Length: 329
Image (cartoon, rainbow, N blue to C red):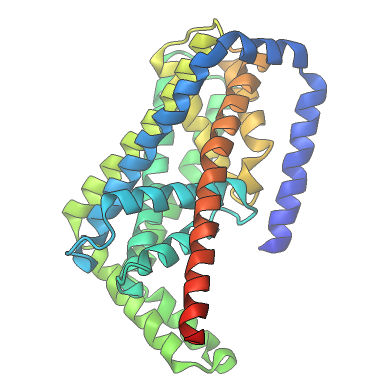
């Protein structure tokens, strides 16, 4: 995974450099500067995305945390940290889930239940991302942009459809974590880990049978993804190139699909930018404006992500200091 991440990072960096060489940087910077301070409104707006995800996670956690030891505010912060880890650190979009599980277990919630809620949330995100991509493809067809690029995207989407279906089936019926631990037990030699894996399998199967919670959490995730299209719509409007809401939805959905497919590329570097240029030009948006939108999104990621990461590290340090003081006394 580390080798794939490093390789993906190099590929993404190469894409970014190639785009920078071919782009009119003066026109790009002019577009961003012309928007002025109004772009800053996208920063507080992002809080809505995290709130919708945190609400869904709260529903999934309820059977394991009926007393709400991890409340909505805490989960909102953890969601922001998870997103920052996945987007800003070279962890192939999986490190955020590990960090999120650790942070929630600090509230005294059983680890198997927290891990099950996170895995189910990841599966829901996979399914909802497919639905969001399908929505983008339908809208792309509706606006009459169904050329060669559209057919390639459609074929790729249809060929990959078995992935979410197989993932849900394996997690619900396959006891995948228990079997993995059985394979690793001769190397690990820790029976407790095998017991923990079996417990996680049980909690996963139970979580995947809670239809109401899954439906509500999935709907909230879809609303969160759709809310991201407003950033595209708002930025292009400020850049003097207003587009319809359907165009913003198409662009956001296809960019998200590209980032998910290239999950080994840290932060989707280069992939997001190339996607904006390719799909943007298909929708009548110049390469410079498309890259300007991508730049705005990157800036928003940094302004949200860096404080989130720093707050997480401060809390880790505080807990470590507290543990050392307890041992010393």
